Amino acid sequence: MGLRASALVIWIFSLFGALPVFAVDFAPIKSLDGRATLVELFTSEGCPSCPAADTWLSKFSADPALWKEVVPVAFHVNVWDYLGWKDPWGSAYHTQRLKQYNAVWKAPRLRTPVVALNGTEWKDWKPESALPPIKKERAGILSLYPARFQQVRLEFEPELREHKWMGHVAVVAKGMTATVSKGPNKGKTFPEDFVVLAHHFARLKKNGNVFSKTLRLSITPSVPREIALVAWATLHNDPKAVQAVGGPIPLSFLK
Image: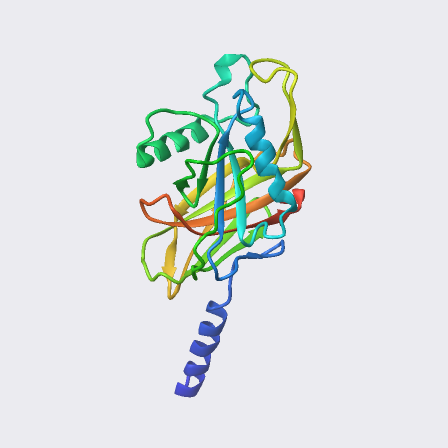
């Protein structure tokens, strides 16, 4: 093979090698460059003061800033199940996440509801509170590329040139209603939105200025009528979200 032919083969190989091998089956979800606010609610259907917090979080469904500027998620804990009502969305993993936050915040005890903004506790939150203004700053582009078989490729091109990034992906359920028949909230009905069904995270791999990882989720299709994909990026060993994004996705993603 001559030099020119060899160069051509190498060029073709390089060209095709640069093409993405990950097949995207659903519309990509991309953030803006400006930093979004990740709103985390720790809640439980068995917590007497939580229905007001769930109602507060559900109002973001009608917020025009949803998914691009405000990214809400609700982690249901299982710590109050002993009071007589087992939260169907409650998880020991979510309880552990709250405990880890408490250790960072030096909180004296475990309690709910708790609201965190980009990983920082909102100590004076009340059910009538509006989101406080967040400092406007460039954070970088965070993208989700969903595919069949519950696969998601997460890519982050950060403004901050650090080398150790963690990527988080969650599937959340929307448009639900809780009807509680036992425990402290017996007889109450209240909205539930942005309920975390699964949360996966992993170290992102650097490739030039982009950090990425392909994750395969594991979720059993259940009762939600609507779901959304949410992602956020943090520095390694730091719970503060640097960028976040989300968006609706068809239920067929779970199949």
